[in-house]
Image (cartoon, rainbow, N blue to C red):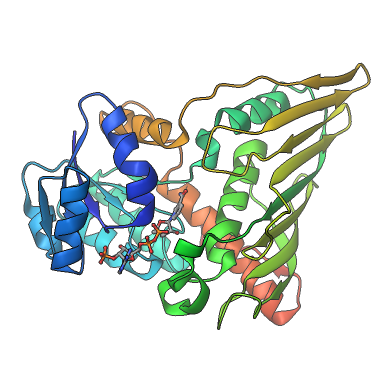
Length: 333
Ligand code: NDP
């Protein structure tokens, strides 16, 4: 499968180009950048044959089967719609779009055209999260009562651009990190958070966008979820805990891009360390996408999954701004 990169981004460079090439028979053949010079340099440095500033160039290339969209968030909608119209399968970065309504437009267009639209939620591809989900679904924790998510990090210096000062490009910790946590909770529980309360902060790093948020969600089955996302915490570390009537999972350092972290299962029998697969998260995302393109199954996270994680993030933002308990609006999905 030949891929076109839409966006000469950091995530493509640090993770996705390698992940695509690690899948046998897959290569990156072209990259789109808004800057001809940067695009050329980006391509040359990473062994990509072609670079272009024209979306049409990439989409009209008969040698390209799929595109990976990793531009800033406001561009995901128009670029995905153009790719779908051109018959290219789309793996799009999170947040899928700027609004749930836009995400729904993308999902509908892909469905109508028979195109695979996937969201690059990497965490549900992690061996650690697959293992925790397995503990939940096999009943080892009993009935799940609550989940706590610790996702307050220090935004690396090289990512302190549009994320901290440009709401029009989708900046802010809510679109950046809350979507990942929402997707992880949905992946674990197989149900969608129903309503949320939240408070946000800005100013420590974010200009015109929030740089920290805490929220509490409830699910239809009565699970309460407590989350903390931030760009400003150098030493907090990440983690997730799932507490049930028969056991608790306490996982540390697992809300990351690497196959790392520790999982502890605590039950009436004592404490036990849980082993898990250490495969590359992004390689699995590409692999599941490729299988879906062949018509066999679904990508790890579909377009609808991207829409739903965005819907939770939208509700968190609304709740934080209004101070009101807010129902999550999934736009009919
Ligand atoms: P970057 O800021 O690296 O890239 C976004 C855009 O900014 C690029 O498309 C590029 O525009 C432009 N750009 C990048 N570097 C430079 C530079 N040095 N000078 C000028 N312009 C530059 O963003 P990220 O890679 O961090 O994020 C891109 C997308 O991926 C976002 O939607 C984000 O939410 C998502 N993401 C997902 C992650 C995951 O694990 N799933 C992790 C990180 C990000 P152009 O293409 O026009 O050259």
